[in-house]
Image (cartoon, rainbow, N blue to C red; front, side, top):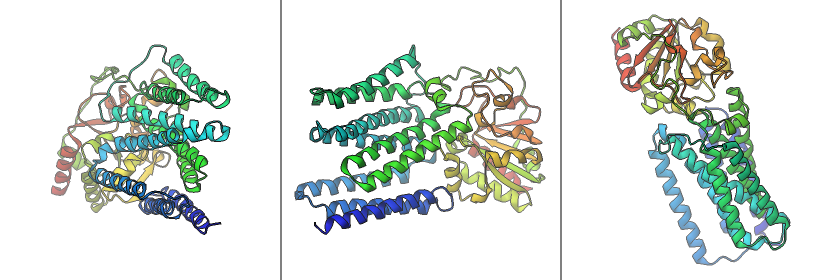
Length: 464
């Protein structure tokens, strides 16, 4: 036995351990960056070991093409990640996730001719093909929804029936290819590819914006699962471990987010909630009146408060105002005001979006409080400043059984003494429903672009 094989297995073991350690470290904001680097190091070890320790003879031209592909991918990924705005991070996550699914599908297409008539291998190949294709096409639709290219959910007549029929067709077709002789030709595999791509599109198209964080997480788990089947196919421990970790973590995160919304996963997938913005798009189906507050008045109110809680939302990311909000936090704390940030599990456009956004402006991690932790503190809070958030503070989730978000746990900001909501206008949030919080007597609206308004607020606080 060649010495290369044991060395290769050891390299894969090292990579697998780094994946586990890195993922564990990423569960804490303080160690997340280091965990990401450890995982990247492990992947580098696996790639280098595969290229140098494989027993098969590989032509120099192939090595050259592989290295060129790695170089192109590294440069493209580095430049994109460095230049992307924080508001575009959800789109980037969807795009990268889609590329992972596409890779899994392409591996299956390439290996399919070599695995025909081998039932076990065929199962791995076709599973990787189907799941990878669904992840790719679904992620591309999610990408277009998030960047505004496809800003309206498309509701197909009898959607649930159509979607279920297509899904059943894909599964039955794949099963027939595995177990029926003569039904495993190249033509059939491309038909299966087309059906899986179509299902991925149908799967995501009707799902509205309010559920995009859940969809992104679910598609991410699909990509991990597809990669795991590739690990089975090649008997590659690093690929298998990485795929299982991504798939299981994505699945668990999806379930946690569904729990945070108090909705079953089936309701997210088949309910197509959040796709319409007709409800209160112009603001005011509640029939109430709103009052606004000036920047100088808010500066005085916050300056003489004992406790302030800030609720960040997507509007904060859009305005790139995370640095200004951190400056306001520091100004208030220098005056003896206690300041915290309330983070809802599905705030923003992807899991952990607000945590990443605030980390970019060096907000102390200890000031970030999750929903269960912060909700009991609102009754003792003088001022809550809601910046660009809407649906996660909507009291209709507690009081209106007819509301689509009824039963969803929210940040209970309406229990505070004063609630200040910064929005550009009275338009509905991403879920497309009105928010009775805006008409609460304790609520004052601070209209305008978050960065401009908060910059003026910081200047006013300094002048006091």
